[in-house]
Length: 102
Image 1 (tube, one colour):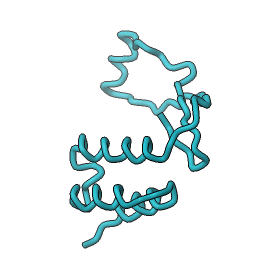
Image 2: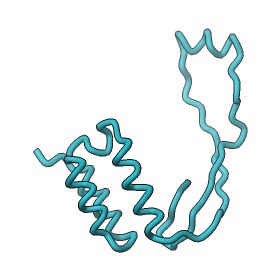
Image 3: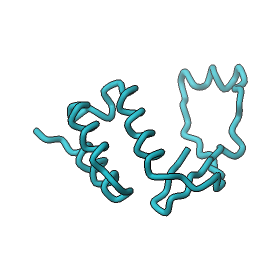
C-alpha cells in the first residue's frame, strides 16, 4: 500500500511481470543479469486516516532488520513517529532518520 499526502491510499501492481522464469532465464541470470523495467499500474483504493499511516510506520520499525534504524535508535525513531500529527511531520522524521549522524 502507498499513502499520499492528500490522504489517499493507493494499490499497485507490476504490468507485464513474469510470474515464473524459464530455465533459460535462470541459467542466463548466473552470467548475465540484465536490468528490466516493468511498468507499474496504480489505483486509488480509499481515503485513510493519519493514524493508519502512523501505525504502518510504527509497524515497520517494529519489524525492522536494521534498515530503518541504520543511523538512529529504534526507541528514538518510535518516539518521533508517535509525536507526529500530520504527513509533513512524518516526512521530516523520515528525512531525519536517513541522515548519518556521525
